[in-house]
Length: 360
Image (cartoon, rainbow, N blue to C red):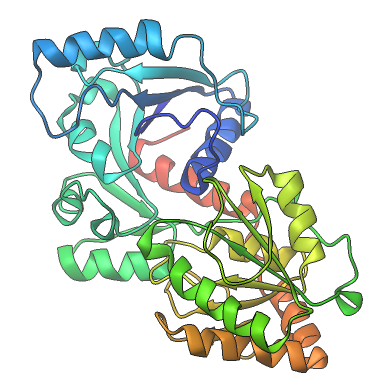
């Protein structure tokens, strides 16, 4: 069976959480003897613009000169998966297939317009992208006649409310080959870690302000930040910063941490949060939707309102001054996420495809 995933532009050396989910599914499908393709669209063809000679010239430059011989360096994609970089949006350049996935609002209208010879149309949704800049008409893409699969309950409810259509849920998962406990939860120093992300929806501003409050009250606390961009330059406290970390480095950071902070305003699915929990870090998070499927307030995580630096700092302080509570939250967190296995999610994805096309 030929299965095609259509992604926005390639990030050759920059880890992207949503891409990681797709890559895991692509690898597993290829191992089951499916013919799997991943198309990375060329940004020389903006998805909302019509074809033009200028775009064609830009495409030729991107494909054959600027990005020639590039590859994904941050994820181990199975060699059986066919990668097509700088893909044009012209239909005749698409393979025929059995299944084709749109994976973002910027790819949904393109996939929807493809003829049936390219396969049954699916739409894999990991966020409400109307909150992104730019917004590729996200809410209207939800109304397209494609089988929609979402990764979190809040997304399912939001789409069903807006479209009055049935949406399938395939929750995200933990990669237990890459994450786990190496450092005893009960013997960790006061180390706090957090993802540093410049997108406003990630709430980093509030996380940084909360950490500044904590560092003023508890100067001996260590802070570890990581992200894909260069680190903050005007922080009011000392910290360690790691850029473009791989899973091995993340595992080390999470295992060094007693507390992990997720300050997002709206989160599709808290990938870093669930990975940190699997490594034994107690989670302090905003009530951002994306952690609801795997957390309970004051049981497996400390949850506070979004956009409140003070309440986020207070949540962190609870665990700093009460180590028994920190240990309890961390252990409950590990226990609460054990059902989120890759095998479970992959089986659910396979089942949905079978229901739609008959076999896989």
